[in-house]
Image 1 (cartoon, rainbow, N blue to C red):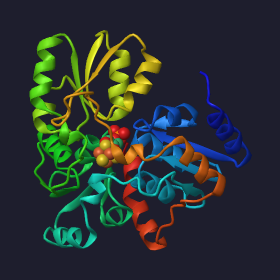
Image 2: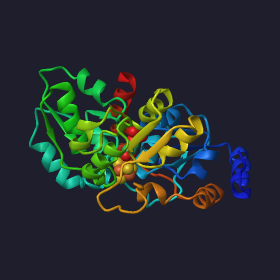
Image 3: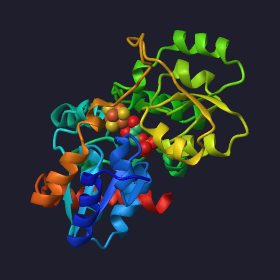
Length: 310
Ligand code: 13P
Ligand code: SF4
């Protein structure tokens, strides 16, 4: 792999500073190339909690960097761009959320990891897309459940577990945008292709998917599958890892409603991080994640429960 001068300088700098770079699969390929570890939300949380580094540069979105800080409070956690948000996390304004939770005093609150530290602090369990089924199934059947913030993931969990759940009305702007009509047209052109979808996608997409899973699970499915063509229902960033691992597989991103040209479904929040910003934040040790200590302690409880259960 040929590295650019900036990538090479970054590798030297992180060694000098005893820093580790964690990157989500939706990050730009040039960031994934120099990361110490690339993974899904659950794997990155585990890596963050186990790290002995002095500095963690978290190349992902804000809630992921917050989770890293909660799990490894003595570590300095930096994010290349503090504006790297998430539409799901943004869909839960705290005051409104507290009002909603109060309506269900007898219910257990399960929150998808794509939420703020404050929402995590109010939750009984946290889950990610890779362990959500396991977490819901671990809750005694006599307990009622409220689930936030992703309505699509919530509906999928209701269908798979048969549990009744009250859902918060949040959605991911990227996964909501996939066009069912355009997917059906693609299936006509590629009848043997396998359809893969992240559970944040709409139920119409999930219904026709051959496989539903977290980003890591989708990548593993392609790599291990004997099929050669795949219609990919998640952010296009995962294509980088799949091409590294299985260069011969033919990958077609599922087009979005708006998109008539490139068929790219990019998360604008993830893409605000650039290799230059990774360098800048590590050099100046800026964009540090600082949390209220009380929120940090309370949020750790449901995250740890999740890690023990998964
Ligand atoms: P994963 O945990 O599957 O990587 O998902 C994170 C995410 O934000 C998907 O949009
Ligand atoms: Fe949030 Fe969607 Fe981007 Fe994932 S893809 S970080 S859920 S906005």
